[in-house]
Amino acid sequence: MSRYEAAIVGAGPEALVASIVLARAGLRVLVLEKSDAPGGRATTLEFHPGFRASPYADELPAMPHRLYRSLGLARAGAILAPSPASVAVTEAGTSVLFANEEPPYFQHAGMGSLTHARASARRDDHIDAMLSLESLGYYAEAPGSQRYPWPIGLLYPDRADFVAFVGNVGSRALVREAIGTFRSAVSFPSEGAALPASIPGVGWSDHWSFWESGYRAVMVTDTAPYRNPNYHEPTDLPGTLDYQRLARVTIGLTHVVEHLAAVP
Image (cartoon, rainbow, N blue to C red):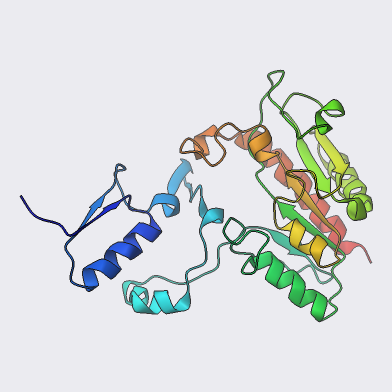
């Protein structure tokens, strides 16, 4: 039987990097992976014929340039690029892609949206509105399928069949404007709320960074852990999402973005 000096359980990005580093140091390394292919959270899956994506791409931290060079990934044809998480609409209609929305960076230095928002504030950039497109594809009709942090559930429906527009108190006018435009564009259940940022879940995405920097921002979401039992679980796979409803939401949000970008 072969003798190994190190065993790595799982073949995700971090595990593969650790394996390479140990092997380069001269150790015999065994990598154990239950799936048919390596990659972990970075694995690309075909969720619909002709459409492929990584179901956990927004959780992957940006790879440091030093590590990229050290592993020789350029020689293998790999291109270093940021992981998109959200879109900010500026006065000129510019789209900005953010990395590192998930822990350990969330609401700390290194969070891509926080870095961008703080830099924008230092430059005194005019950003009239920011939309953070959170989880948007999970819907259910059953009574009790929608949950909320207390006491929000006293005011909103218990069926998880709607998309939510969530802002802080300072963004309440933007919530009304965004959801009003959405409702005029598509017939789809929607709920809006301008709530204190201290309520759990209200600030759980990149819009929080813009609140912290003095900008108006709204999260558009299916409420993620408050309805989706697969959220951040191994069962959180493309086949659990409702793409027909997601398409209708996308059409409505297209109108919202076009409206906000055109407002003088």
